[in-house]
Amino acid sequence: MNFPSIRILLMIILLGQTSIVLAQKSKVRKANNEYDQLAYVDARAVYLKVVASGYTSAQIYESLGDTYYWNGDYVNAAQWYEALFAEFPAASDPIYYYRGAQALKSTGQSERSADLMRKYIELSGPDSVLGGGTTVLMPFDARLESIGLNSAYSDFGPTFLNDAVVFSSTRPIEKSDKMHNWTGQPFSNLYQARFDQKGVVTTVDLLKGPFDADIYESSPAFSKDGKVMYFTQNQVLDRAQSADDPTVRLKIVRASLLENNQWGDFVDLRINDRSYSTAHPALNSAGDKLYFSSNRPGSRGASDLWYVALAGDSLVGQPVNLGPEVNTPSRETFPFITAGDRLYYATDGRAGMGGLDIYSVLLEESPLVVEHLSAPINSVMDDFGFVFDEATKTGFITTNRNGVDSKDDDIFKVIGKCDSQTTGRIYDIEDEQPVLGAVVQLLDDQNDVLDTIIVSKDGLFSFDTTCDQSYRIVVTAQDYAPNELSFVTPNVSSVADFPIPLQYTAPCPKNDLGCLLKLAPIYFDFDRYNIRPDAAIELNKILVQLKEIPEIKIHIESHTDSRGDDAYNLVLSQKRAAATMAWFIEQGIAKERLTAEGYGETQLFNECANGVRCTDQEHELNRRSKFIRSN
Image 1 (cartoon, helix red, strand yellow):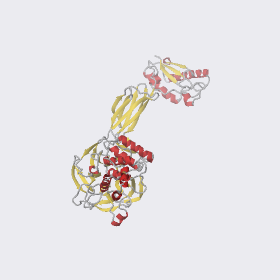
Image 2 (image 1 turned 45 degrees about the horizontal axis):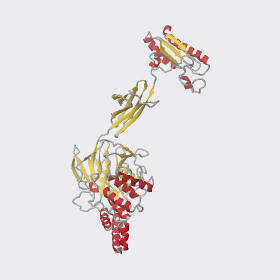
Image 3 (image 1 turned 90 degrees about the vertical axis):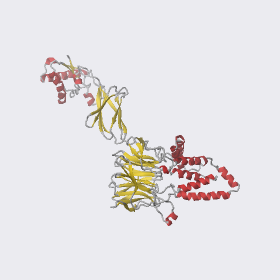
Image 4 (image 1 turned 60 degrees about the vertical axis):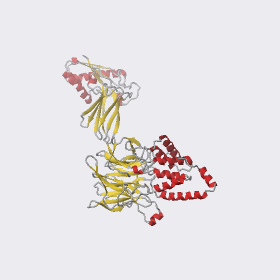
């Protein structure tokens, strides 16, 4: 399409065609009025005619782009935003670079989208759009399944009600023929779908109760017992209110399940106000907080997520904003909270895959950490209205990925399983090199060995594990001290990686009984050679071997630390060696099987030589004895 330039418009005015231009401006004022009321379909038709007649402005292109953008038609939205940037870049509000970036991303023009996003950040500052959080795997390897729930109209916003699903649909019903000015479709009504044991839809019926077919009703949330429902409804204004402020906004209504199995006793919540929208309710697992989306005062963007405390059916206190960890300068909407208090919601205010994307937040965390759900949950189109049962690992999602306008909103079933993988690397703690041949065992919480891997030269291992289970990993390797760790896998699909260090231990000489028996050092007090009680415990290990194998003979080596005179230490070590030998003789070992020698400070274990400042503990390491088999 060729767009007329501002120069052509000026030529028309100069040629005396002022009356035509004024007539077009009158049409623009009419379209602006309808645009302000969110009557996008009618406004769009007027704007298109005005542009076709040769009259353009930044506002027209902005509003034309918005009529498509807010209805999820990103192909046409991108076309008009691009026209805006081409003709009126200086006149544009920076937010239109952001919307253009989102629209182009959904059409696959990633480079151009990135350029517009950089332009938006350049004009609005780095804090104008929050980052996208950490991308993680879904709670399962998901697949989407089309079910017999959808119509040729918009079907969206499902939620669980016992063994059924309640959702919204704009499919026509007999008792109403009105069309919504915004979408060009009938008003949405609440439906209940039931399934057989194979998950096939058996019935789809209007939710029973005095619902109004000629107003917008959607996004229900139910109490645990299924007897209380909160749902969204558009506000109905009288003539005086419409004259004062014609914009139609949303509100939340509470309903009760009556004895005739119909919904009734409708009550508007006190948090509603006709000057802003309050919509899309969700209850936390305890049922003591009602979450919702609203553009009420204090909101950071076009709509924020809020919550208000509940005591029974009564609201307590004032609404609380979830804050900048969750809310962005754009839209946050359609919250849902699982039994584990994980919040899922949709937003177009983060660097996602396109349009509305679904994110999650564990409400118990502080600070809140936003996680972006991976494909196939998110796509380049709008994805919202995600609900999830953590027990069955199934859920539902609304998406328009099969088309480009709101009539293509469809509900898909989400099916999958939770997958867990545990990986790691075995390495030497000193040089950080992989330990070739290390044996890695995976044990369950009963210490049964589930799998064993011998690592190759890269030191890597990998086990398939189960979500939300306790495990142990035990690592052994020749010439290394073994190591182990215990862990619990997350209850979402994940890859847990554990780097496991091993401490190298020099191999024991075959004749060193102390090393082979993993004998603790035989320590002596400073300037003493008597056998300490802790030393006697270790000496008994050698004593057992001497008694069980009568032919064994041993040579006792005794050492001192560097403190004191060298000659004196040599004598002291000889006394310690003799004292150790005497202890064995006292325990019944023949003198002929024993020899002893003291080495003083000539064979220090560490760097604590003469003149080196060391702690008492470091010096103690040198006051030791060794037991060498001599036959």
